[in-house]
Structure formats: C-alpha cells, structure tokens
Image (cartoon, rainbow, N blue to C red):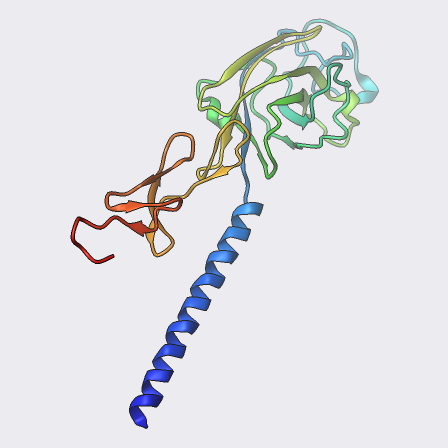
Length: 245
C-alpha cells in the first residue's frame, strides 16, 4: 500500500513539475510578444550657429522684453535638441506634435557652435515595441534653454525634418542640414533588441540549452541546433546507429 501511494505521489509530482514548467514557458512567450523590438537612435555631431541667433533673428540668452536684432555681441546659446519621430510623411509639418513613434529632449549639449568628439553623449534613444515600419519621418529642433518658460517658438534656433527609409543595422546614416540660421550635422540608425532579428525586428530568437530546445541563433534569427539535436526547436535528440531513442 505504501509503495502504491509513493508511486502515485511521485507521478503527480512529475505531472505538477511539467505543468509548472509549461506555464513558465507560456508566460515567457507572452512576455516576448510585448518586449521592445528595438531602438531608433539619433546622435548630434555638430551645430554651427556663428551669430548666436534664434530662428526669429533675435539673440540667444536675452530676455524677451529687451531682445534686439543686432548681429554681433550676442550671448552664447545654451543649445539642446528635441527629436520627434513619427510615421512616414512626404511633407513633414514644422511642429513637433503627434510624435506617434515617440519624442525626447536632450539636456544642454553646448553653446552656440560645437563639435562633439564623443557623440555618444548626445544620443537620443527611442525604444519601439512594434513592427519596425522601415519608413519614418523625424523632426529635429535645436532649442535655446536660456529660459525654458518661454514658448518654443521663442527658443527655436533651427529646425529640420527628414523622411526616408532605414533598415536595422549597426551602421549609421549621417544627415546634414543647412538652415536659415544654423547648420546641424547628425546621424541616425535603427537597431533591433538583442533577441530580435530581420528588417522589421519581428523574428525572436534567444539561445537556449534546456528541455525546450538546444540551439544558438544565426544572423537572421534562425535557430542553429547544437550538436546532437534536431527538430524545429532542436528538442529532438539525434541517436547514433543502434542506440535506443
């Protein structure tokens, strides 16, 4: 009787362990579906604003009530950048509303003109949790942070918009804007999250070596079975001739 009870108990425990492991696997699968697919990245390389002017023609760093249109002797700007990312538009608007893919503002990166020898310090990273659309529109603004209570229109140094196509890659695409008031050089790229692959960052692959699979991941996210394993998820052992599977 004791042996029968023990055998039954062990069988139930094994079943319980299997159910628990399966539940964890399903939970991880659900988490994978809602995890970030990748990042859109922008880095400022250079801005040249030799007159320290705002786009309105007034000086940076001067209170609204005493601004003048003088072209020399202006205080240096306190320059920051704002990125607005949205779906592709052939004629981008000049305002940063409706940033459907996200928006972000840097801290002050420098004065009126500067070149960043370490562009990483200017990085703007916008994570996305959707299928990368390949095409996009960005609006980039340079702002004077002398007084952040002023309306954006009174702090705007320069604005540029770009619409195009970019595929996930570690390589950067450099863009140059020569505007009415300033020149801005920056670069952009899209990178899939560590466990996501392909041109839309939708192929998920995480190397594993456990009861649910034995594989590494290829450059396109394909599962590469470890030696001795086969099957869709590399969960089937390859037996040598004469062995009992």
